[in-house]
Length: 242
Length: 342
Ligand SMILES: Nc1ncnc2c1ncn2[C@@H]1O[C@H](COP(=O)(O)OP(=O)(O)O)[C@@H](O)[C@H]1O
Ligand SMILES: [Mg+2]
Image (cartoon, rainbow over the protein chains, first blue to last red):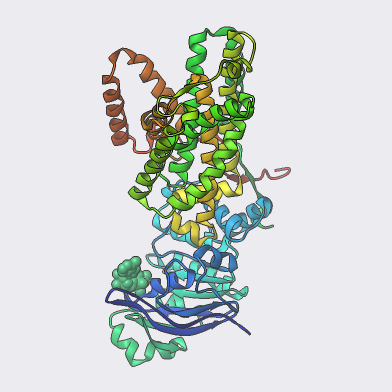
């Protein structure tokens, strides 16, 4: 299998705060990678750098064999990246269905009827169909997170970037979300998934990386990573029931 | 069976169908106005249509693309002067001159966009105003167009619209009605289209819009150029009504931007219905307070502040948020298909 994404010495600081410190790794096509790290470690910033909403200070990002470092977010989305935002960024004045339609017509570039059909399928998959005609601004946080996932899927990505979509879910909801993401992954999607709920991550991903102060401090098999000393040091108090 | 087989998607709602039928009836009634209205009423209606058009256009710019321009008088004035220049120097028929002004306005808007798109927020607003001032000073230098003191439209040009004063007034009125209808139709069709969906996404959340594949710069550029062209066209028509132009009148920030902003903000920015509501409120206030003189402006300001405090999304925003009503079929709705035989 080829490489879908690779980061080479990707670096970014905000003044004295380094949020990405020479990040270097790659993702194989069809792979699911988990990302953990304490709050403020730079996980969301890493997604911003990968998807193009934040410019790099140095380094290079390659996606599907093309250097995308200088492309903007829209170009990278059309090339096949889609993300969910940790803090939901819904189109509040539009309904759930219309939010999905934007991803399908713009990101996936589908003509009207095909876009509509895709949105219907995805809404059913993400269990938002009952809210299809509800304004996004009226949704509770949980449904907004589902909408983030819905929109990302409606852009028909090759690489799906998920930023803490399981936070605040009940056990039952979390289980159903894990099933959903596992199914998406099994269908061949490459995924990078940031999550504090480690058992959710390890149920799906085959590899884990750990960020702290913008640095990748551990990488590898989830079990081994969770048991490493570095991780235990920064993760005292966070669940490790993987 | 997958979801796509069990649900159907539609765009026109009952409200939008009723609105379309009523709108068409009103349009027919207004078209017949020269037979049932007096000269003064026709003039007032014409002015209402022109302001509705300007409000629709400013709303696309500020309410959707996020460009709070206070310099749209640049295009209104440009349109006015183009009408005069094209009829006087090239002998064009006024209607042809109005159409040509629209095209020229769109062309002018392109380099202007390249210039002012570099500015953000308040600097953008100031930039648009500076450009309008540059236009005003520039046209004041043109002696052939009356310089600083202005010029009247030659009688021949006005006469070429129709024979006789009543017929001329009627044609002139129909032109305003036609242009307003065209502007509303274009705005509606644009917002219904793919690009329009992209623009609506930008209105609500630029970060998400970019991340979902929308080329924000290109979409905004397109909107700015279309709005610039149509505002120029409306400007040409405005000065065909007035028959006289001067730099002060042509590039008046009060007449062509301040009142228009009032209309859009009162009515509801970022919706197609808002400018309709705002235009009605504005003209009601104006006609009711006509005797107040300058105090009328103070009342307008007070109304604007009151509405902004009570209903930040304008009067239409209040209605929409409490009823979910949408009069234009811009959105998408979905519902389960009827089960056959069930
Ligand atoms: N646009 C920004 N400007 C300045 N500082 C930022 C910006 N975005 C993030 N940061 C800072 O960078 C650090 C990493 O943030 P973030 O990537 O959101 O962390 P995480 O997602 O791992 O919790 C934090 O200290 C945050 O305050
Ligand atoms: Mg984060």
